[in-house]
Length: 328
Image (cartoon, rainbow, N blue to C red; front, side):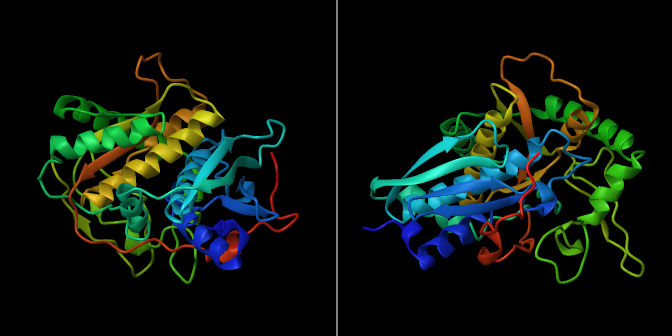
């Protein structure tokens, strides 16, 4: 079987899968370059990096790691074994990974099932039911994270309540940062865009205090967002990595996407509460030492209603063009 990297149709299918990964504020900060039909490069599009919210580029790397996982999975389902090298050139911050197509290999049933979830997965910012995610499914999510070198810690009720208070304090501090709010506002816009977060995917304004959802604070003249009460005891989890550098962030992104696709496979909804992480990155703070590692994502798990998908750029836009990317 020939590699999909060797044909235009194969490349389009791979890019379509990779481009449906989640990303911070749906910035989709990635490009891809296919070299001689032999391997693909995952490139950071620094023009799409959030300069205020993400000064270290951590969220950009996590986002690109999620796209890398989709690319790997699509190659696997196409009958190829992907060989990945992270940060192949330490002197070039643009090239985040190379992916070669090795010997043919039959995909597992789980790989096929996860790949089928790529276009179905959504970030669900609606209120969830009171139903708890059962231990058997939580075990699947933990295993998914572990397969990518990360750890998923599911918090109990008391720990979740403490974390929600921490999220609320971070929200209060960020609400006074006008540059931060302007950056969020720039990426939460309606219209015919292929990126960013339109109002339809933001969910309602939370009535709870502390809120188990990010209130983007977006208001448009004549278009008030509805308000709603969210579940009083949200089920929270954190994704951690042993280190806190670019390689760890890329691994976190791959682990995140494997977890999200596994959650989608079991009908579990997920949204994010990363305000404390934004604040940590913006203020140059460091995590206290913890044997479970550095927190890279804060996740809310549960069962929500069907929601629309955020827009995506077409595969043709994801191919690298010379002079488009700005290395930093």
